[in-house]
Length: 196
Length: 187
Image (cartoon, rainbow over all chains, first blue to last red; front, top):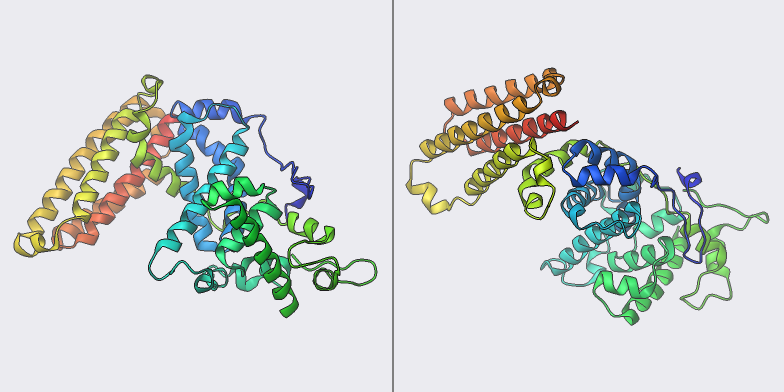
């Protein structure tokens, strides 16, 4: 797909392609209310934002699109607080992750969720847009079918390159819990790949 | 993404399952690289911008409150006011107590809401279009289509005055029309 647009390192130093060069001027214009500039930022970054959200929600097409839309609305609202201390793409990526995680936490608080990842285990396989069902026998599918919290930790740690401390902060859990979820996710990943 | 095979035909799955170093937590380098390779851009299945733009238009007042440069964006002000009013009308309609609707002349209230919404919408639209008449005119075909839709909804409301869903459709159409006009005016 778009793998050629990035360079990666398992050490967590991924240099993801990001069109930062022209972002600053657009961000400044958008901060002054220029919706056209914000649309340009949307066009530049929507693939990256939707990508990370899709991974976090298990490639559930409709949910990923709804959350992507939500992330950009929040980005517009938060632009006045953006201080150019980090690249806009980095800031937006973090905001997108937080948007997806907030939804994940909200699902856990609903009565039917019962706070039990196993009860939510099917979320990654119920895909109205057909993304998950269209996935072949592969690692992507195995990640998609992980329980939500375990998947979130695995995606953030092993795919996005976050540290356990960052993940713990984002998910509102202890660092030890993040490590335990990663352990669980990796174990499940091997099991599910073995089942295929 | 399909499972890759290395030179001796071992699949990634085999690598995961057979690596003797794995204790339930660690992953071999090959798997770690494969996971990291999942990090890629994925375009959504549809263009999400129209919905984002409409929501931005409806939520603009909250952003303005914290901005020091709002004086530089006069075209947005009337739109923001109208959008907030439309939103308020929509919310008032949505949270209408069921008991009240059962005891009051629902149709008359819906008609009053529709008329108030239309007045605010017309006023905001005139101001936005006056600020950039050339730009807003450039999108006339799309805007005219939305105007036709709004007119049809208003006609339907006149025929079926207690149809709340039509009021919601009208609010949505007005919001979209204002968002598109705002984009044209600011671009």
